Image 1 (cartoon, rainbow, N blue to C red):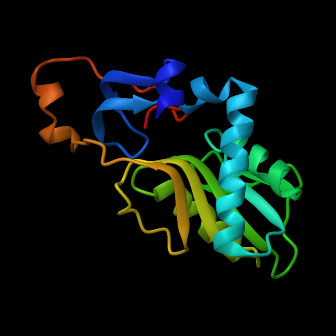
Image 2 (cartoon, rainbow, N blue to C red):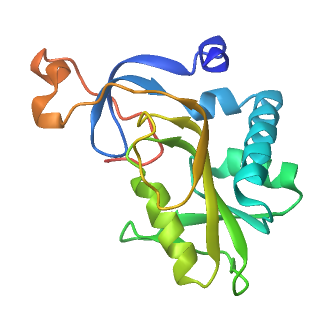
Length: 188
């Protein structure tokens, strides 16, 4: 968290998260990961945790946009290849750009921030449907307080119990404060 505060990546206000929930705080990973030394530090730390959880790892997979930089750094630290998923025109997670998995390849899924785990689960299910196995998952931040269930062992560099609200019960909305969507997925 110190790195987020030092780089101005820990934001306070009224935010709409990718999950649709509202929150008075937001961790803008892109802002902290713009510093290559910090990205490398986080990647090395997550890679060590992945080795402990998963043993043999053959590929790192991450969702675009949030997981791109940290996923690449973890793959570099592990000395394995890195691929990423993207959303298609129907907002469904998919592989593009000729990416593929070898049968029974051992993958780890890396994400920047997990709140509900929805995007992470989409990536994990996609990888499994393509014949590889996801043996662990990791993120820089876990906003769920450890409650998000991805169906695989997982670790985060920092675990927070972030305050979130359903939009219809959001006290910030009730105060008339404008909501900001700072993440990488417009409209969600």
